[in-house]
Image (cartoon, rainbow, N blue to C red):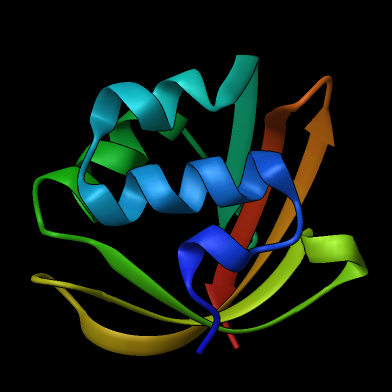
Length: 106
């Protein structure tokens, strides 16, 4: 596993650390205005998704590996709704903020 503070891309590191800390404010501050996301290939409302899949259900990501300069992750993701699953995450970063991420089962 790769500790949050050792992830290569600073913007991704900030987002993952905020997610794992359950820090909704820091999570949203890591995102660029108008940031978007998709889950299993379907675009979702990012704020609603984060509330439902992360903050109200104790979401947590354990990163197994990273590629693409730290903007592509494979992680064990767990929450109180779905349990644990192996997931992939792809991040687009601009100006030090995440502008989009895509996640789904690996």
